[in-house]
Length: 229
Image (cartoon, rainbow, N blue to C red; front, side, top):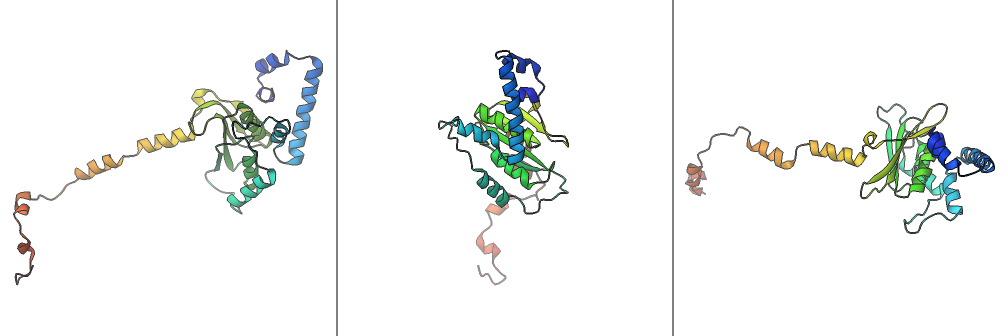
């Protein structure tokens, strides 16, 4: 519902809300407001905390959320101490098993705003949605993929954009998304293979050689003037 609300998707939002009464709608509105306040004041992933506290994490998926202090320490260790504010290209940071996006939030704290692009992938639908919401809450540019990093299959992709008034999120159509893995593979395929390079080398101009004469040459022919071999 929160994703539908942030995307201004009234049709899907109202389809869910129609199952509830006015009282539940008011409670949801208040809960969402408190979530935003809590995320801002805590400056970390609150959705993931709630998810764990409610016992929603899955042992089947091996879900173990990294504590916030370890996430921050990891980001501080990996990132540059003084990120370059004037880079031509943005930093690219990816978490292939992102959960609620906690590690990427910590990374975003270490980098200049609007100076990085983040990629989150998770095979659990709920976790991917939490990551998309967190990207929006923390005003991060990037993409959140509900999919499998190993098989490179994906189901849903959300794009998030930062701005001076806060983040935005919207769902992409299939033709609007190209996996970074797929793009890298396409780049590799466009490069010449070693076989092609070898064939080109073979086609280069080479001096004329009489191979019959070479075969008849004996070792003594390479000796010095005194006949030493």
